[in-house]
Length: 277
Ligand SMILES: [Ca+2]
Ligand SMILES: [Ca+2]
Ligand SMILES: [Ca+2]
Ligand SMILES: [Ca+2]
Image (cartoon, rainbow, N blue to C red; front, side, top):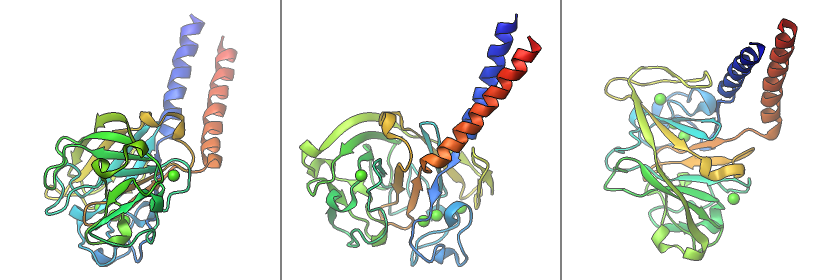
């Protein structure tokens, strides 16, 4: 009778450790001043909520708000309509760096309305929407491409805010030796019309309403396997580059602290269980 009791307790502790692993990974996009269009500083983690890039249109419907990561589950919080887009501009691809060398900051290539390449940006994977029509990405279906940092891996540039580059992979115009499809899937999107919503790590984003709600995209990153870890970075923008959002997994020190806390919790449960038996 003692064994099932211990199992139950341990499972509960593991579940708690799992939710403790949910993190808001949003970092500052380094385009300043943040929140130009809103007329006040951005709020929330890294000032990304209630913020669009300098000189661009403001409003919840153009605001990318936060990234959270829980295990291999990435959530995208946005006032911008992720699946339908906002006329006349659709959602860009999700660019991922796994080895810490991406030139994600504004300045790597500040041209607009043309093409550029990955020798400048050094991303390693792209979640590429494969059912784009006008501003819509359909039901959010995508292919994941592993890419090399070569000049023959081509990207389409943003059309308005150059510092937000890139926005999409040009898979068909890239050298197939340097672009390989490694996974496919779809992003489910939930809608929440609350003004303030609390993310799974306890941080919040604001500005939702029945007219301009929050859209919450859900992406499975299990294709990254062991490549997902400390310093893995995510970049997202729209065709116009109106808002750029960047997320980065905290360094190993923070992850280790979390794991240590979770393990000491399990050890405590073990001691309590042994005393009771
Ligand atoms: Ca907002
Ligand atoms: Ca924003
Ligand atoms: Ca890289
Ligand atoms: Ca931003």
